Length: 165
Image (cartoon, rainbow, N blue to C red; front, side, top):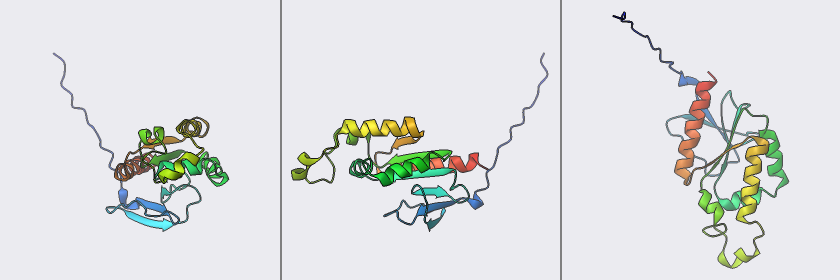
């Protein structure tokens, strides 16, 4: 007969008293985190981070395919990607789906009579997104909706906070 032994499991309780979400001052219609402390400050890179971890965590939010389609041709955005390379945790979270990219400019806010003038194709957008993942090691998450994207950002921030404690 084997001796009976008790295994002791410890639960690592994380102290969230210093969990403060930072929101870039240029962020329009920011995500809301009603159960958490937030502060609006100028972030050099990204739209969201955590106090004390703003040199490690960067979350860049994109509200629409049109926004990312516009960004991928801008030098300012290329500079931001270069700065993101330095972060340990870097994410782009989209409030739209991969399907929205694949059918762009359909379902976009671009007027139908202007769509024929668009020079950026879904394939070009996918090429650029894959470059960001491979060349910059950025995790890209398609949240499908603003609420889902916000929930994913919250889950990421909590996990990074736990890992860095």
